[in-house]
Image 1: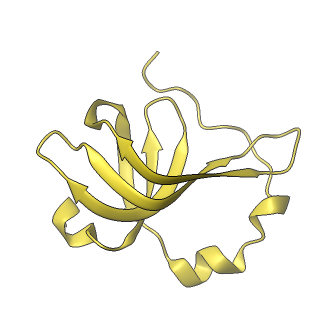
Image 2: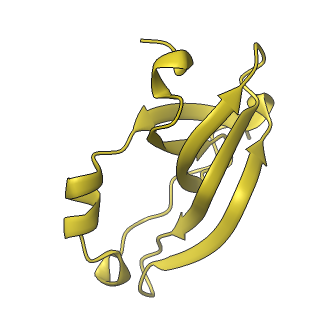
Length: 94
């Protein structure tokens, strides 16, 4: 699969600094710059409930993208993200 297969579908992006961003992939280029719409950032920590921050249309620079994957929307909708706690994903660059 390539990113072209993900266009117009909901994706989850994990960045090199451990952020988790979800949204609909609207476009990309050869350096993996990504354009997402209807995007949110999920912040999960051990000491408080998960936080969801609306981002809207969002551009992720390719140099910051670690992983891109398709979201199973029905499974994602079944999870009560407000109650999820866990260790943040570590910064993989430093």
